[in-house]
Image 1 (cartoon, rainbow, N blue to C red):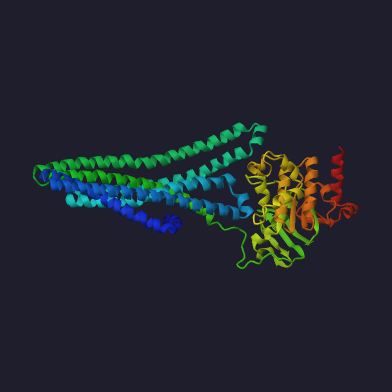
Image 2 (cartoon, one colour):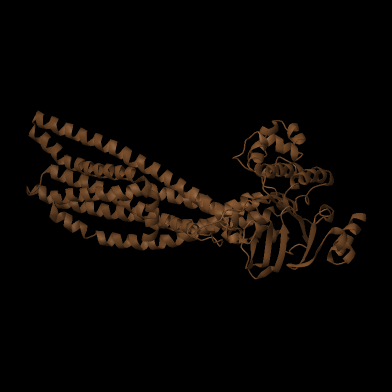
Length: 576
């Protein structure tokens, strides 16, 4: 627990000047508030004296204390709240940065998927924010209680000592509840992650869900998870709210004891009415900070659990090891070499002893059955993963020694699954490289054969593309992605099934853009349709993670091997 609290405090450290003001205003507030309670005795004494000057003096003192309390309370809570806002913003930004920089294996293997990660960045962060707001109470209320207890000792030390003997019982009770609370909060946050994942799954797959009439299945799944979560939250709330009635009952018993005690003391002339009023006022006031301290203490248990879950992600290392002194991508290079490369997803071997040399300016096609390792080769080249064995070299320099950002800057990707930002057409094309002049957007759109359809849009380049480009057709999205690759102007180009999901008419337009894009670049073309790879310099046929044969379209047909089988099968399917 202390480790997690320390991690939260490290996030607060940059705001130390504000924290000092929060601490000072909290101390002043607590001292003045306690003094106000003690002033009840002076007020009663001034009235009893009948001295106008004394009454005036006491009145102005009370007014000054009340004004100080109001000002300090405002700045204490206001500054704590905006500090909490800033800290959670830092956490969100760190989490997003972490997600974006983790290797693809982390994202593909994360149990709750992207919905679970969203839960951590939204729900867990909200718990931390609420907990940080409670830190002000956690700091201020114990101080106020100490000052009020000092009042009680000053007014009647014997009685106060007797009352304080009850405190260890309450503290023990509080500790037992907090242990139980942490357990159920952790279970609750883990289940909330599953709920977020199910909701995201429902939204992402709504078309398929409706098509297969799976609405009730998803509804029942969410209901089951929500009911379980509700049961856990009931246990959390029962423990949080249990302390209030317990302390109120104890406080009532104590107040009754004070009445009986002071009743006898006043009757014997051992105390004044002012003493009684000041003691009761302080006693009643000390109940409130104790309750708030208990609440903040319990809420901080939730914060500890949420912080632990956040740091499970932040502290998790990426499997991609970055070089201490990275080398920049060579400006003048001659070849890419896959040398004895093997790769597996868990226990599933995808590539085995893969060797391939690609010369600069060459167009190489990768074909093969699904799962033969085609897309894995592209992922390894962009260093989304590292090979299990072997290495990938550019002019003898291992990718592991290159600066990752610089490596990816030199590789353009056009894939089947086009991802567009929820932004305008113009910004999506420009996102290829925002450092380049915006004027290039229209020029590159024309090269990608996207100009005509963009002009037909209502707002043309300023038109919104929707979530993941949902307002555009498949062919339109693909041409925007080609224009984006033109803007990037990378010397190496990967075309990963770039036309496989398009109709014939869209494919013709997209292929024009791709042909223009490939000019003067080193291209790796991954395709199922053999018609798109016939003009490549070399065609590499993969089977079960190994190279089955390599050659040109004509030479492979003559050898009548795996490529010939694919070709014959596709021609047969096309004719039927």
